[in-house]
Length: 177
Ligand SMILES: NC(=O)c1ccc[n+]([C@@H]2O[C@H](COP(=O)([O-])OP(=O)(O)OC[C@H]3O[C@@H](n4cnc5c(N)ncnc54)[C@H](O)[C@@H]3O)[C@@H](O)[C@H]2O)c1
Image 1 (cartoon, rainbow, N blue to C red):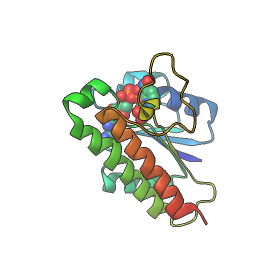
Image 2 (cartoon, protein in one colour; image 1 turned 90 degrees about the horizontal axis):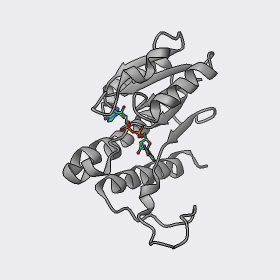
Image 3 (cartoon, rainbow, N blue to C red; image 1 turned 135 degrees about the vertical axis):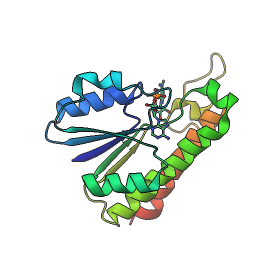
Image 4 (cartoon, protein in one colour; image 1 turned 135 degrees about the horizontal axis):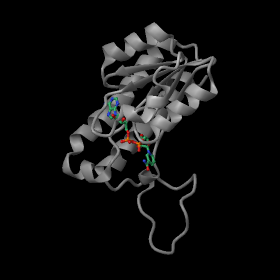
C-alpha cells in the first residue's frame, strides 16, 4: 500500500503516521502537511529517516501538488486528518476553516477520483470527522448515537460537517454501482 496521510505532523496525525510507519514496514507512508501553527515535525523525529516514510510540506488544497503526489507515489490509500481544528480560532477567523476543511477535502477527493479513474478495488479514502458535528447535548440527556442528526454549532463544526457530506456524496455518486 502507498498511504497518503494528511495532517500527519499534528496532534493525532503524528501518532497515526508513527503507527503506520513502524507497524507496516512494507507499506509506504507519505505525510502531506502544511506545517501551520498546529504542525510540528519534532513529533516525528524518531521515524523521520525510516525508509518507508516521506514528508511533503504543502497544502491539501493545492491541486497541482496533490496530483504530483498521487502520480509520484501511486497512492492507493488516503487517511485524511489535515484540518483547521480549534473551535476558538474558527470563531475569530472562520474563512480559513472553510478553505482548508471544505475546499481542501474537496480537492483531495477530486484528485483521488481522477487518479483512481473508476477503479476503486483496493483503494480507500478514510476521512476523519469530529463528534462536534452533532452539536451539544443538554445536561442529563442521552448520548449521541450513530443516528443522531447533524447539528453543527460553530464554524469549525460546520466546516467539518460539510466535509463529511462531501465525502459521503463522492462515495455515493462515484463509487456505488
Ligand atoms: N483533537 C481532537 O480532539 C479531535 C477530535 C475529533 C476529531 N478530530 C479531527 O482529527 C483530525 C486531526 O486533529 P488534530 O487534533 O490532530 O489536529 P491538529 O490541529 O493538531 O493538526 C492538524 C494538522 O493539519 C495540518 N494542516 C492544517 N491545514 C492544512 C492544509 N491546508 N494542508 C495540509 N496540512 C494542513 C497542520 O499543520 C497540522 O499538522 C482533524 O480532522 C480534526 O478535525 C480531532
